[in-house]
Length: 96
Image 1 (tube, one colour):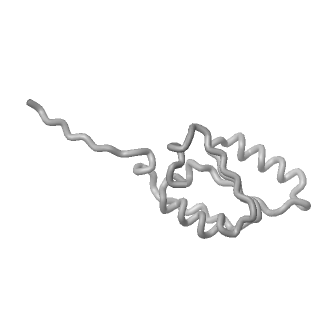
Image 2 (tube, rainbow, N blue to C red):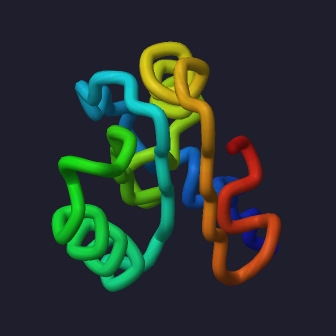
Image 3 (cartoon, rainbow, N blue to C red):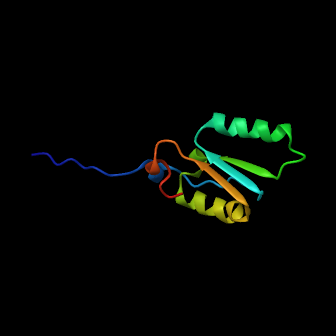
């Protein structure tokens, strides 16, 4: 008989913590989709002088719980509006 060693790990366990080094803004938006973020950036840029400040973040960069906590403390808690677009369901960004 052979005993196989196995481990259980999620994608979140494999991610390294990162600091996005963003400054606070009135509106923050997060998405896994680059086209979402590019579209929001282009729309905001078209009328930036009349719109509130905005920060965008890719959810793939906020996979580690420490990254999420740091981003919330430094950016999200100061925002007036937070938009999070999660495709794929709850498990794709469980900690967030």
